Length: 120
Image (cartoon, rainbow, N blue to C red; front, side, top):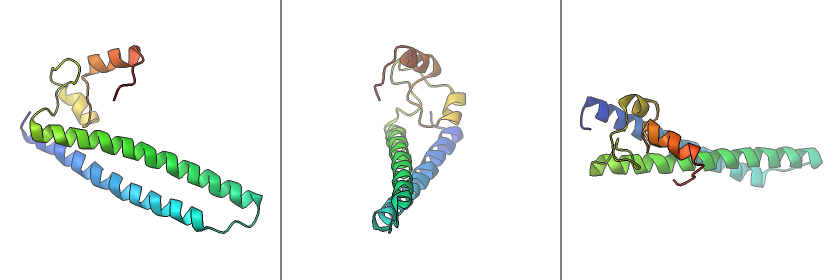
């Protein structure tokens, strides 16, 4: 898959990668602020804890996506980008446009989800 479409998808992956790195850095700053924030009462403490929990969950989700993007970019370098990890067939371009870091074709993804597998 070496074409303009390939280049466009790799560009999207790189842009998303940069955005996630920025988001994670901002999230870390926000978490650091929570650590040093002054809580005046139990309500403040609860609000700070809730904010920290949400920020942490978002950060973890972003890091998971970053890992998937890094994997896709590595595949782009070694020639395996756009190839299903289960069946070895090309992943449909429409799926790649929707999820440029897709690891499986739609058929294998459905089988993967149906079996309840959680292998990443």
